[in-house]
Amino acid sequence: MKLGVLAHTFGKQKTNDLARRIAGSGFTSVQLALAKALSDIDSSNGKLSPGLANWVGEQFSKEGIRIAVLGCYINPVNPDAEERRSDLARFKEHLRYARDFGCSIVATETGSLTTYQKTHPDFYEEQGFQVLRDSVLELAEEADKWGVHVAIEPVSVHTLHTTEHMQRLFEEIPNSSLGLLFDPCNLMKVEHVVNQADFLRDVFEKLYDRMIAIHAKDVAFDVNGNKYNPLPGEGILNYPLFFELLKTYKPHIDISLEGVTEEQADEAAAYLRRLWHAESAREFISS
Image 1 (cartoon, rainbow, N blue to C red):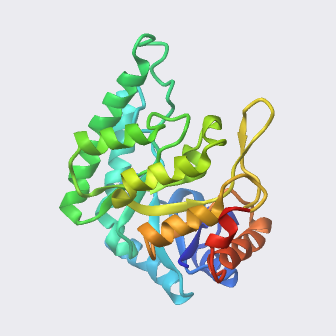
Image 2 (cartoon, one colour):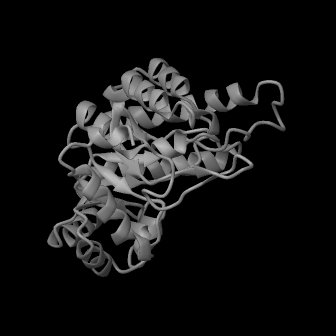
């Protein structure tokens, strides 16, 4: 099991201290959001370079940690065109230097579903999708130049919030540099709870070939249908089935633990490793 963690789970620290702390918990990779995780690096627009990226990568490599994904969570549907351009420039800079960090994936989410509700009340969802498509097309073209990947993460309340939306984005941007960062808990809606197995199988059957990274946490809904994230094993995600599908469709894909605190990380990781390495995950599916 290639189990990593979101680096900023352990707070914002000096690079070498953070790498040492993460290695101490047995993680072998990270999703690294520079601005959130590294206190000794200025990653503002224009500040990255091959030398800086190599240095950061070396600090993690010394501790046996691989940078699997660069997190660059911009708002690609920002209605302020100037701010959106600045965000896209930041993401492109991450793409240019991704391989100098030792990785080939840069990831983002897709902005709020209701971004254009006030300005385009009758078709705000479609307006958001069109802005997103234009932004992602630009990023995918940049990724092509550097031989790296743009990873898009759908979320139930964001511009991309269904399997069908992801399929449409891939159809309208037929670029192999564009991939899916799949977090089942982020994509899951309350209506999926009853038929969760069908939901998970449907996503894998339709999109497994575009999955390039995975997030691992758990999910639950309160009596009002509000989503929250308990510790892995304490929510409703059918982890045995999820892991079985990963082993079948995407063996050795990078998995990053998220949705936990620093204090919870070791316990959560131990649970996921035990389940993954169980003699047969299938025996848990019916439980």
